[in-house]
Image (cartoon, rainbow, N blue to C red; front, side, top):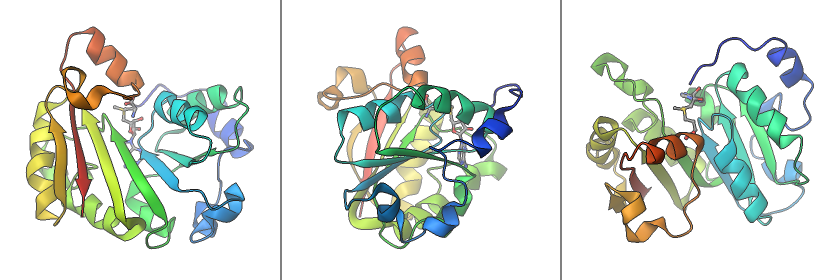
Length: 211
Ligand code: SAM
């Protein structure tokens, strides 16, 4: 998702209290920012942030960090975040390629990937958030018993991920090609994209990756 330039987005983000502006400085110290030892869950490519904001409201004992590449999208998440009375949610504007500069080894407890960009051309496969290159990065920042939970409507990206993730020496569980008609739907929080695809009658694929 890349929205048209939003006037003033960069300026507003630069002064927003819920955006971490120098995230490299928090590496190994994220618990100081949250002022507690609660687990840290992150969403990479959070878009307008509906999913992670719902999780943060429902789970006050978990710390959440939403990562989004584009200011024009992040500003929409900030607008909603400003209205919430919670202390367990921060945002970072960055390309997740650099994620190992942001988190210490094993500092993250769970990773969500929702409706990630498919990058359909083979030569762009490394940019897919479920590529073995990205799973190498997750391997570093995620604690040993942590999991990556991935949802997508895109069957090609899902089939790629089912083959690719084991190549990175991760295992898969709770794999479904139709989340909303599966046993895993209980407690599912819908993302913005998911709501749209479900309304169109598209099945949602979902997997959990672990080591
Ligand atoms: N997760 C949201 C949802 O399900 O409604 C948004 C899905 S949207 C298709 C994918 C989002 O991921 C876009 O907002 C895009 O800018 C962001 N994104 C893609 N690649 C990224 C990366 N390498 N680092 C950070 N954000 C990324």
